[in-house]
Length: 342
Ligand code: KG4
Ligand code: ZN
Image 1 (cartoon, rainbow, N blue to C red):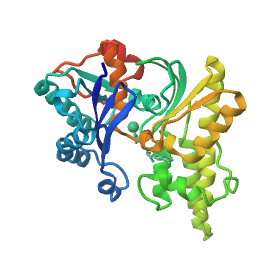
Image 2 (image 1 turned 90 degrees about the vertical axis):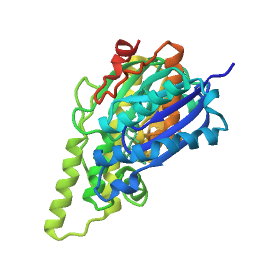
Image 3 (image 1 turned 180 degrees about the vertical axis):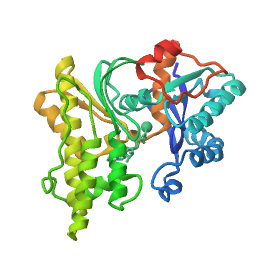
Image 4 (image 1 turned 90 degrees about the horizontal axis):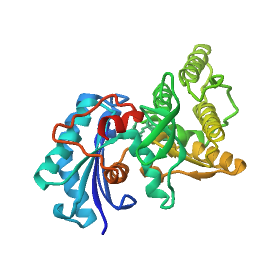
């Protein structure tokens, strides 16, 4: 008998609901993006995000059920991002999930947002099983994670300052390319020379940690100096050179993690995993090192309900449940999932 999971994601600026069968087959994945709203401000405005989630959530649930061709009665369980994220935004999804769980009389399963991102790989690669090493790089996080089992994670490295996506967004804003910056820099970089300008990467001795504030500051200083000298800025070259530095350090640490753990499977996750240069670089490095490489389709890299439904499916199998007292958790350590929810 198959299990149908409804997944709800509202931790940042996407209201998304999905129906997934047996954790791996996506029947619907409706994403209501707020990007156009936040563009004007150059980044996500938390209060506006919460309000938009409230406006959208009911119709996104309806659409997801309709598109999947299933009724509420046929849904077996409800998964929801409980954290981390913007607290007001999280609360909209959590409240919707609790309400549906109560009214439909279905179990509620809290999901960690990063657990969701990592799980997007299970949807794309039907044969993928833990353990594997995964780079999770998004607007809020940059972690190297050892996925030991479904729902069981060990953080091997993390950013000590900015997240990788945050660095993309800030450089994009400085270049006047707009928000979100990742896709725009990715596109511009295709026409640029990655060796044109040397932006230094930060490496830590005996650590898989990252730092992106150094490269970000180097780019901002470069832009200010060139402007002060009256020189023309070649945007495509700046994008390609900045992207090269970030991709190099992400690839290096991820491959080091695979080597240190001796695990032959390497995956990407999170919004930055949609980056074409990162995908190409990690793919090449894995091929050279004889490692299997996994990555979700770009639409499953950025925030979506399907990855939450997938994670909820496996969490549900291991007995994780949330009650009607479930709350949003703005800061929730990925390693503490079992400690909090069993
Ligand atoms: O995972 P996500 O949708 O939301 C968070 O959990 O943060 O990631 C959004 C981030 C943004 O910073 C965005 O600029 C970045 O992912 N991003 C990219 C690309 N597409 C999205 N970064 C680099 N290259 C891309 N193609
Ligand atoms: Zn995310």
